Length: 386
Image 1: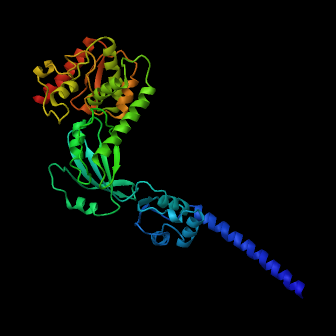
Image 2: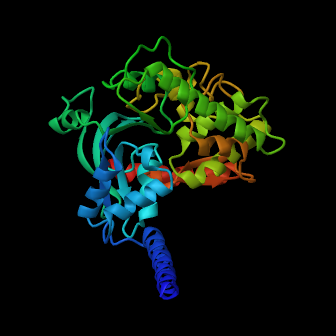
C-alpha cells in the first residue's frame, strides 16, 4: 500500500515539475515575443512611480497581455528598481522585454512634448511640438519669436509640465554673436555670458537642456563639440592642403558654409577655394565682405555696395590675399570635412545657377566659361526686375 502511495506521489511530482517547466517556458516565450500593441503609444512614467502602476497602465492600454508577467520579468532581470521618469515611445508589437528596457534605459525622453529653441541665420524661433505616436512625427503646436512676440499659452502650459523636454538647435552658419544674443532670450536658462566666444568655435547642432541650465556651461559644451569635430577632421585630412593649422581650415570651412546652402556642393566649392589659394589668387567671396561690414552682428539685409567690395577690412577677400584672420561664422561638421577633403577639380570660378540659392552653382575652369555663366545669371536677374 505504502509503495503504491509513494509511486503515485512520485508520478504526481513529476507531472508538477513538467507542468511548472511548461509554465516557465510559456512565460519566457510570452515575455520576449511580439506584444499585442497594434499602434505605437506614449507611456508616461511619473516621478516616484513604480512597476505595478506602470504595468497596470500598460495592460489597460493593451500594450502587454499580463501586467503580472511584466513585473515578474522585470524583477527576474533585476530592473524593478531602475524605472526612469519620463515619456517614452513604445512601438507597435513591442515585447515585454523591450518595454522593460525602454522604461529603465534612462536618457532623454522619446515621446511627449518638446520645446525647440531654434537659432537660424535670419531669425530665432521657439517651437512647441508634440510627438504623434501613430506616425512617429512631431506635430507643431505653437511657434513664436521671443524677441518680437509674447509667449503663447501653449508654451507657458508645457513649461509647467514636468516631462517637457527642451532643446537648443543651432543652424549651420550662425555667428557667435547671434548665438549669445539668442541664448539670452531663452527664459529657462540662467547665468550671464561674460564674453562672446571666438567666431567658428561653436558647433551647430541640437543640444538638450533643462530648466535652470547655465548659459556659459551650454556654450562650453558647444565649444567642446567643435573642438572634437575639428580635431577628427584634421586627423583625416587630405595631404598637401594649403593650411598650416586646424584654425586655418576652420576659417575656410566657415566661408564654404556661407557660400552654399546645397549640401552636395560643399566639396566642389572647397575645391574652388583650395585651387585659388594654391594658384595665388584672391578668394573674392562676398560673405567675407559682409562679415567685414557686420562683424557677424546680424544680417546685412541688402546688397553689397561697390564701395564695400573695395573697402579694406581684415575679412574682405577682394582686397586681402589668402584667408581672413578669423572664421566668418560657425561652420557645421560637413563644411569642416569639405574644407579638409575637397573634390579634385580644376574649377576656379562659380556663380549661382538661378535666383534660388537652393539650385546650386555653375562651376568653371576658364574665365570665358565663367563670364558666360555670369551673363546667364544676369539675364535671370533682368527678367525678375522687369
